[in-house]
Amino acid sequence: MTIVTTIEDLRRVAKRRVPRMFYDYCDSGSWTESTYRANEDDFAGIKLRQRVAVDMSDRSLATTMAGQAVAMPVALAPTGLTGMQRADGEILAARAAEAAGVPFTLSTMSICSIEDVAEHATKPFWFQLYFMRDRAFNERLIDRAQAAGCSALVLTLDLQILGQRHKDIRNGLSAPPRFTAATVLDLMTKPRWCWHMLRTRRRTFRNIVGHVEGVADTRSISAWTAQQFDPRLDWDDVRRIRDRWKGPLILKGVLDVEDAVRAAETGAQSLVVSNHGGRQLDGAPSSIAVLPEIADAVGHRIEVLMDGGIRSGQDVLKAVALGAKGVFVGRPFLYGLGAYGGPGVTLCLDIIRRELDMTMALCGRRDIRDVDRSILRAPPLSNHPGW
Image 1 (cartoon, helix red, strand yellow):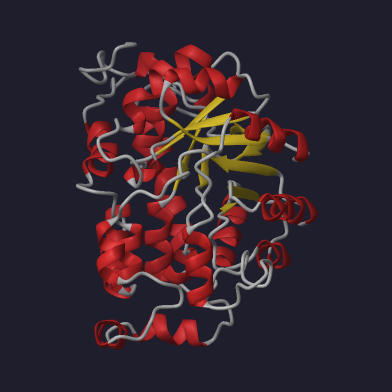
Image 2 (cartoon, helix red, strand yellow):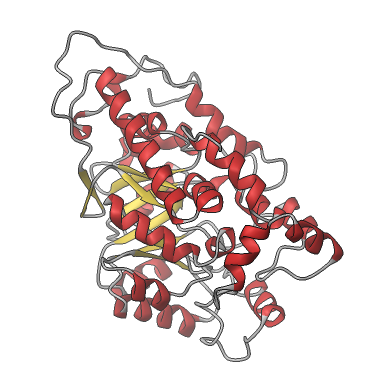
């Protein structure tokens, strides 16, 4: 039996258990994957100050994100095709997040629908919106999320044009998978995944199928989504969504100070410093590299969150120290989901929580709300202009 103590352990198990096209979809970036790698690598260059002979008792990780009380400054990120890592994956992840006291964010491109998750959740979750050319569809999605009791809307700004992801192209990514010689041979080595998938009716993009005229199967949905991401999205569109959505709005995909200033002017509750996990513009900086300058520029006007490269509780602490009020984790919980289903997501969050708590204590802090740059050895990043 595999002994799991780190997120990397979960990744290795998931790689064995999840069909190749869906594992690769999770664990890859665009083009040369340089930004994907930088997201993780740049965290390693940030060094912590160990403190001794300080009171480490009665510690607290509790804080708020987007106005919501959370057990630790972590939310599960919106990830497409989550229900292809494990059958009913979005439902399983939402339940695990709920039990851990952190937000779960459902993607527009999920396998389980808004209504599926709402039916199985006992607390509100967040919903992520991709802005489509079909404006009526956008409005219906927002209204469905509102009706389901979603407590925040996450609007993704950095997917107006889809970045080229070579592994997805080579693997012929689709949901459900198309049966070719290669996929059949791969699926034969993943009996556990197949067994769970055969027991669910949720195998395609249920937020879309049945909600768009003429979209009823894999081929039609692929054609529809290929032409629907809207390159015309601008700040006026963001404000219109702000006006329609009755709750906290989180703007995801900000990587530049100038855009962060514009985001702060929209009336949104929060922004997420993010490069889409290195899956869009390859060659862009890592999220953690630009987080401090964005937090310095707009942190007094809008809540600053971040995602990209988080693989441990230590990474969470470093992000908070550099100005994030919280982080989103995507790949770590997908590894847990692919490895062990819902209990794997719980295990992922437990690993992050324990690492965060222990590291905070060894840095001489008892409350996550008191963490700042003074816990870091300067400079945290040699090329950081704002340190």
